Structure formats: structure tokens, C-alpha cells
View 1 (cartoon, one colour):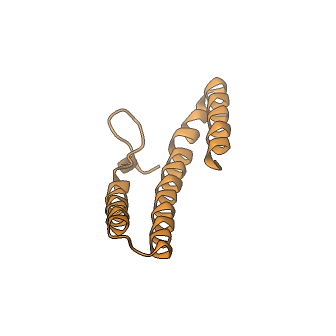
View 2 (cartoon, rainbow, N blue to C red):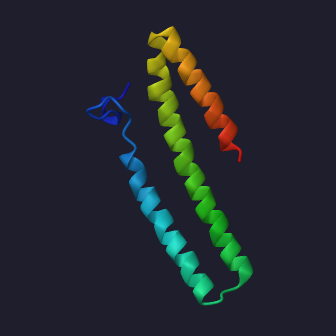
Length: 97
């Protein structure tokens, strides 16, 4: 496992997502500006889809890191493993909303 992905508390490091999140914030600000300027609905919808796609990419990366780090760690204990399985079940149930 890559030790760069862990912080002092042995939790995954998601700071690599900050750049993408900052770009998403820029997209959202652009969408707000488009609405203020009464831009074409189709253009606004296109930008909304792009922002949603970018958010999903961040979500997928965080989930991937969770699976690679937190879930793998849970294999050390039966109780912890079951907790992670339940947690993942809940995450996946909410993921499709």
C-alpha cells in the first residue's frame, strides 16, 4: 500500500481531489453567471451535466481510495469486516440516489 495516501491518523489522504474540487467550484460559479446573464437553457444544462460528471469523478476516486485503504484494513478483524460490509452496502444504496 502506498504510504503517501495515509495521514497521521492512518486515514486516506484525499487532498489530491482538491484541485478537481476547485475546478468544480469554478464551473458552478460559471453556471451562476450564465443564469444571471440569462444564457440559453441548453448551454446551462450542458454545464450542469459537466459539473455533475466532475463531482461523480471525485466521488468515484474517494470510493476507490476507501476500498483500497479502509476496507482492506478491515480484513484484520471479523467484526470490523462486517462493519465495513454494512457500511459499503449503505454507501452503494445511497450512491444511486
